Length: 192
Image (cartoon, rainbow, N blue to C red):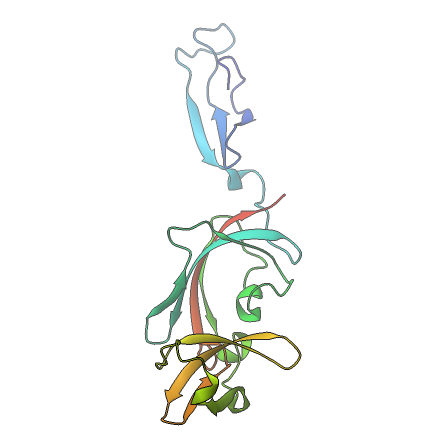
């Protein structure tokens, strides 16, 4: 903004979120009986619509995920925002579906039922194996995360859910399977 800009002229600034409107012109002048320059700062939304997220956009969000009991299972607090392409399947569908239509800086709470998150617990994903088939140097305790390899060579993360004298029960369900999730999200940015 320069002194001398005509009154009422909208001048975009370096910060795309704000515009400055010249309320008076240079000091002093003959055209306008003003003695001082005055400026008014207005939010960007006063003059043009904000860009809304659409499928295919790459976005960045900050989030906190909680369970129904209020306990936090994950958060981007203290880390870089999560970046992903909307509608690409990179995140759970219940959260992905809530992003289109949001604007930069918008915050919202999204409730995601387990069917749109990690699905229900599938009993067939739980398997008992002989305790002797697990190397002795691995300390077996409930909650321990291990990796198994399928006959096709696929690596599967599993959790020890029960330790018996002769068998160990392993669960290949996602740890959040069977849980409804709540996300508090903030859209940080939309890639150009």
